[in-house]
Amino acid sequence: MFRLLQTLFGKPLPRHQADEATLPSFEALAILSSDALSSVAYGTEATLGVLVLAGSGALKLSVPITLAIIALVAIVVLSYRQTIEAYPQGGGSYVVARENLGTIASLVAAASLLIDYVLTAAVSLMAGTQALSSLLPQLLPHEVSFSIVLLVLVGWANLRGVKDAGKLFAYPTYAFVLMVVVLALCGVFNLAFGHGFHAAAPLPVKALEPLGLFLILRAFSSGCSAMTGIEAISNGVKIFREPAAANARLTMVVMGVILSAMFFSVSALGYAYGVAPNPNITVMAQIGTRVFGENSALLWALQISTLLILALAANTSFADFPRLAALLANDRFLPRQMGWVGDRLVFQNGILILLLAAGLIIIICQGDTTVAVNLYALGVFTAFTLSQAGMVLHWWRLRGSAWLGRMLMNGLGAFTTLLVLLVIVVSKFNQGAWTVVVAVPIIVLLLASVRQRYRQVYGAMAIAPGQINVLEIPKRTETLGNRAIVWVPSITEPTINALRYAAAIADHVLAVWVKSDDEDSEQIEAAWQAVVGVNTGIEFRVMASPGASLVAPFVECVESEEEKYPDLFHTIIMPMAIPKQPFDGLLLNQRSINMRQALVDQHNRVFTVVRYYLTC
Image 1 (cartoon, rainbow, N blue to C red):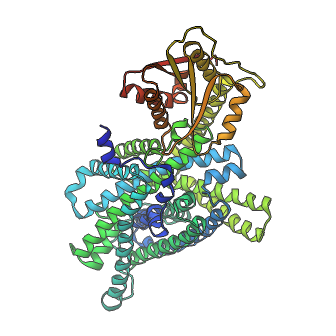
Image 2 (cartoon, helix red, strand yellow; image 1 turned 90 degrees about the horizontal axis):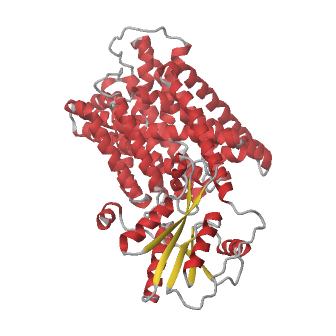
Image 3 (cartoon, rainbow, N blue to C red; image 1 turned 180 degrees about the vertical axis):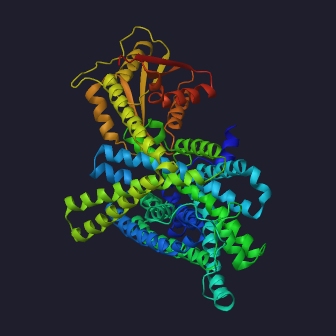
């Protein structure tokens, strides 16, 4: 089984290779911008799908609406370049809101983004399947299963690690960009020497609603789905090679230019050729048919590249959902295991949760993007607004070089994205936006509840300030022939109880703390001495993990001790807090359970769990 897992997901990577897992800008653009760039495939269609309700004559408004969205893209891109400069370690909406607007605002941003990432993964994969079914109508009954297969493939690529994912995703992303460029150039050539520079009249469609400001705003808000994924680069600064911040800022501009040019090209060609929404064939496929010819090789290339980019657009979610979940876990708003880094240097638990959630959305929607598209722009613009408002306060407090201009730029971004957010909520409320409006505060409440429970549980396990625990191995006239190895996850009452038990049953006690990258050995030693004391006869060893796992070094330590003292018994002792509430099992002891399983699976060993029952 272990060899099978290594074959599927790759061999464990040592932590010192983390820098090697970063990407050059060329690959980072592909892995972080696939969501934003792929929205070209359905952004225009989303706008036309609303305008056509007022009849075919209203479709001409798609071009000015596209220009308005491009102006908004420019404002957001310039605003996020400043966010990257201010937060070179990664300035997602959650981080910016947490540091500038407070806990509640940061949780609203986090909840909105978590919903958005799930919907983005599901919508992108369903839309990619629809791109293929536009060419092959016989696939229509199998759209759900095909979307699930694509979801599994994207998840598998990400579980192998970001380096492999970047190489895998670069080619399809740039293939799609190339095909849209070819579509635009061939379209202009056809307009100049064949069709003529005049707009063809679309097929007549009866108006179902009057053409008014509200419908235009609905069309604009639908077209704003083309802006999803823009924030991904500011979230993923750490993926870039050094100088990471400078590379990320440049890549943000390049992405904005490419997105705007492609979006305008598709909208303009759609208007010129009189394209109207069709439930059986996408707008992109209709334009490709007019430009390249029906069933031509270039049309197939366009649709296949569209399928791939839409499938890979889900990768933005697979890059950012686990990272955001890890940030929340580090702040104790989610269970700690969401912040664990797997052997391939990825947040594998977050990837698995996203796989399940996106798969559920695909099954519920039965492969139809109509409802989901109405939802996921809402989360994006909530995050946009909070991030830019946070940056306004950031520059106001810092007041460094050129702070006023930077504050005004972010203020413009906050104002415009807030207006769009209000338009989306009002215009899309009855089309499903109400579900997100309801879901966000529920998720915020759940996140806050997790942190509150963590505080209660850790408070119950904490050692009282100034408390000294005298731990000594008693002097014995005869040796017991037993050595104890104690796993020390933290210096708390459960750990002290485990150490007391170890001292009572063994001639020698080795306490082992495997530290993570963000822990300091000297601080750990000082905390140990402050609580346990010195010269107690208990050996305390702080180990660094060469890989991502904190379990493997402890297992290796046990094996090393067994090899040194083959004639002695070894008892492995694990402190375990026994929760009072059933939900607490998700918050506590997960690594201890994995540790026990790893040790028991290898050899016959004496393994003792010292339980500490919580009173809260």
